[in-house]
Image (cartoon, rainbow over all chains, first blue to last red; front, side, top):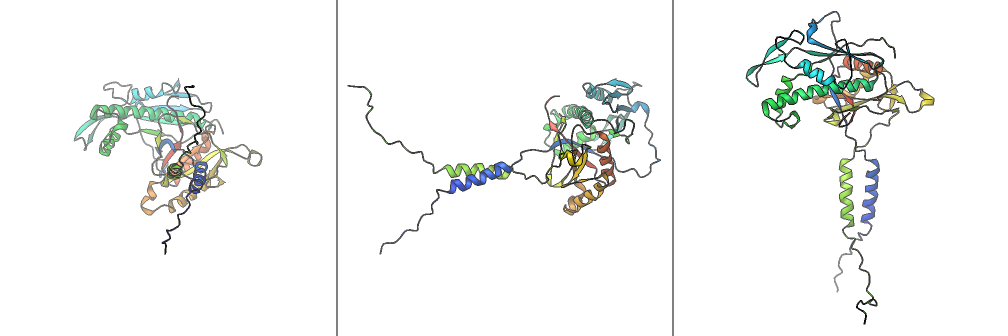
Length: 192
Length: 154
């Protein structure tokens, strides 16, 4: 008796099946990577009457009105130069009364005391401010803080902040450059 | 006497297609792995604002989305910006409930790490965004992400 070999499966339509699946996934794919500016909101206020005293010279006040115009510490400004202004404000200026106070902070990871500014960036917007303007200001603030992180990172580790591999080092830099941005309770002046 | 032989008949060699399925399969696997299916159908029109200093959202499973913008169906819902949670319009007051539901859906160890991504149209006024932020503070969902498009330079 001749032994019959097992019949081969016809694989000719395999390509067609794979093509169909491929086209399905091609159509349903959305390649968007979600990107954005991450911020931590302040926890809800328990005691509304509690006032936190911050010295006037320690605050950089940014106000945006309902026409998307900006005031920085009382002077008109644009988004373009804003991040440089913030860097200038937040960097250390000993013995200069028009800049924020300086405090010494002990950083256990570094094992020494480090001079840090007491400055705070305060952002206040109107209900009529456009979201676009708000984001561009947030972006400028983020840019300023990222640049300061880069500076510190270059000083201590010789590389830029986003090239740090060790999460411990990232943590230290985040401690050295805390994002000190305060957002005031909103006001309704210009209406919706 | 001609130099070139033109009369010689030769059958065209057929291209071997045996490896075609393999190639297609590789493409298929690529798209299968990269695919993320859209969870929500957008009912508001959103054009995200641009920013340069953006970070990628980590851990997508912990992110819940809030959409704010003009309704797509203007004839029915008007042009006033609306908030969309999941698949329906909602008011500002619904946000704490939405957040607690989102929190319940996550494993217990990760409930405190949830991020809220705000996808807001760039022409929206800050009033409604501020209201949403106040509600998020009340609901103790403090980590938020203003969703933006990345541009290299403005």
